[in-house]
Amino acid sequence: MSPLPRLRHAALALLAAGGLSAFAAAGAATPTADEIIAKNVEARGGADKLRALATLKRTGHLVIPGLRAELTVIEWKTAGGQYRQDVTLQGLTAIQAFDGREAWQVQPFEGRKDPYRMSADEAKGFKLAADIAGPFVDYQAKGHKVEYLGLEDVDGTPAHKLRVALKWGDEATYWIDPDTWMVIRELDRSLIRGAEQLAETDYGEYQKVAGVWVPMAEAQGGKGSEPAQRQKYVYDSAEANGPAPASTFAFPAEKPRAVAEVRP
Image 1 (cartoon, rainbow, N blue to C red):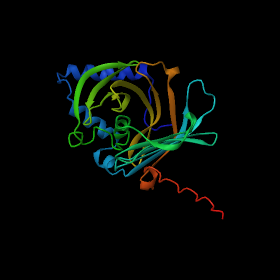
Image 2: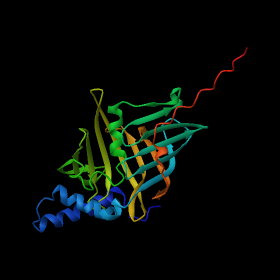
Image 3: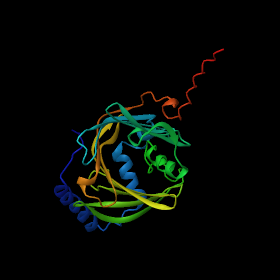
């Protein structure tokens, strides 16, 4: 269980509302995006500790609606902008990886056991997933733009809403709990072959790793999808600054073909 206080949404809403009422009563101005970002970064452990993360590895399982079996999940990300996720079931492993420039995958559950490269549009999403410190840290230097959109209810919690226009053209929106200052929801918007893709993730069960709070539970689905329709990642352990060689993320070298025996 995470040592971070985890209140139920109803109680959290009362606390947050009380804090916001006191804030208004004091005549304070509406917070800016930078003020909210500063609160979030500090609550997560501080910019220095976030920048000090060289690698992050999470291990757990994936629960997919309608599938009784649980899948094993291992995820890596590095400060160099690399990412990989392995999902294993009954001896078969699906891989999605990004070496910082191009993305590739192996999808044996779809009948594709050999690695193949992904399109540039598909690779864009891995740039965000691979950002080990998160897009808020040094966001201006990274080329992102941030806009504060006010308070919005998230399952009973009045959360601060920030929209990030990412450097490569996609967009990510975050909802931040005003009590813990942690991200509790993310909505990613991307264009793939001209079609808009929306993916929503709810975060929880934060755990401290190398002085940084990391979410250990993620529920993912389409925008506005019901909880029962979402796939759930539950991470049992997280390790910071462990080994993550470049070969982990690089497109596998082609195996040499056997030379046919020449008969006289």
